[in-house]
Amino acid sequence: METIVSGYGEPRLDCTPIEIAQAHARAKLEAVARIVAPSSVAIVAADTVVDVDGEAWGKPVDARDASRMLRTLSGRRHIVHTAFALRAGGETVTETSSTYVTFYELSRDEIAEYVASGEPFDKAGAYGIQGKAAALVERVDGDFYTVVGFPLARFVRTLRGLGFSLPVANPTLLQPDV
Image 1 (cartoon, rainbow, N blue to C red):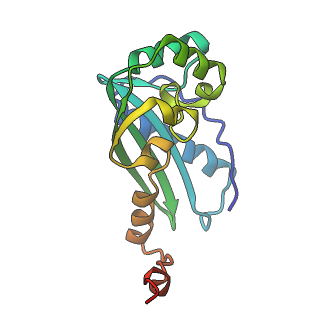
Image 2: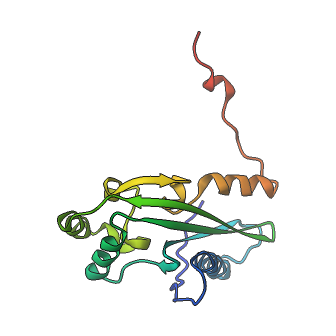
Image 3: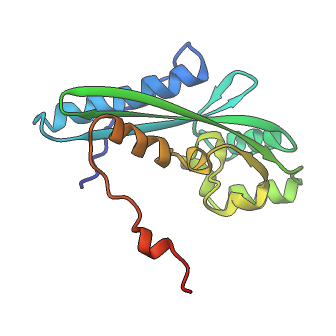
């Protein structure tokens, strides 16, 4: 497995948050496909968008923007959409997973401390649930990995649907000792 940066710039698009995540995932895939020409290679690309009242949020542009986003998310529920595009065997599939996230009420100090950590700057919606922001989240309703940025279970099921043979859990490891 190799990671290749697509170089795709994620321009603003005039469509729904889900459509934006899908379009960016597909565009990242196409950018990498131009670099890696052989069709025998499987390529996967993903994009995550935070959806607040139907408005798509990507990464904050600076500390002020990150603080604004976190103040808006404070005490509220929003949706995280992660789309992935997969090209394998000449077929391209795009899937999307959506998960609801509710934040605790955040104090100014909590927001300032989190922004000062530097963590929000490369994350959609200015937070990474897999890092320090885990303490800001009250509830996740749906797939945690969608919020992290890659809906792993949906990806595995998509691979299986395309005919890929994937290992399954060893049943002997799952049985308790008697």
